[in-house]
Amino acid sequence: MLPPWPEKAPGPRPVPDRLCLQGILYVLHNDIAWQLLPLELGFGSGQTCWWRLDRWQKAGIFDRLHQTLLAELNAAGELDWSRACVDGSHVRAKKGGADTGPSPVDRRKTGSKRHLICDGHGTPLKVITTAANVNDVTQTLALVDSIPPVAGRPGRPRRRPQALLGDKGYDSDSHRRELRKRRTLPVISRRGAPNIEGLGKLRYVVEQTFALLHQFKRLAVRWERRTELHNAFVSLACSLICWRRLKKAHS
Image (cartoon, rainbow, N blue to C red; front, side):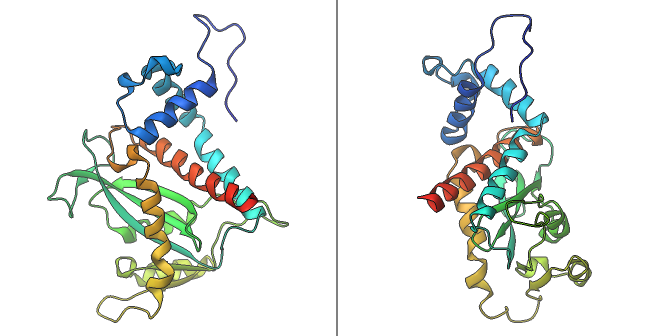
């Protein structure tokens, strides 16, 4: 998937892509500053890995990798399209940057919000990053529409779950109508009414997925000012979650 290097590129021979990817994964798992990346591990300098991360993100490598692994999971019968779950999670943005704002749950400190949609097993399908003060309901349709076409089974690639489960933060009649137009049944509790019975037992998987994402220390706090670089780490983390589940399915 990686774009090839020109054969007669000027300058010294570049660090191999595999080593740069290992350096990026090292930062993702350990949350260290780029300039502190250990040179003795052979990953190249932190600037080299950062530049390669930026280059690959602009080429759409990480989203393509995530889509490919979703297709492998779909072929193995490990994706549950009968329902999808949505939710949002706040994260501090230490250095500010694009798509940040005052967090309503963190004393108005600068932060971002990750909006996640996952399948019925908790496999992440898409994550969208916005400012921390953006309402969850505004991203409902964007999450559903941004699910990539997932191949792996005979017929057209799958893009829509049969039902969408959400808490009262996603209560909106207009969004319910739009979901039905997309042939997705909205299962969303209404404000001022009791919660739908048994909904929490089905929606716990989205909280579980957020917990898996936060195990990657680089995602516990947002350090990147540029949203696309932060999204690169998020997409790579989603791919690793899919890869682990694929290995477990084949074991």
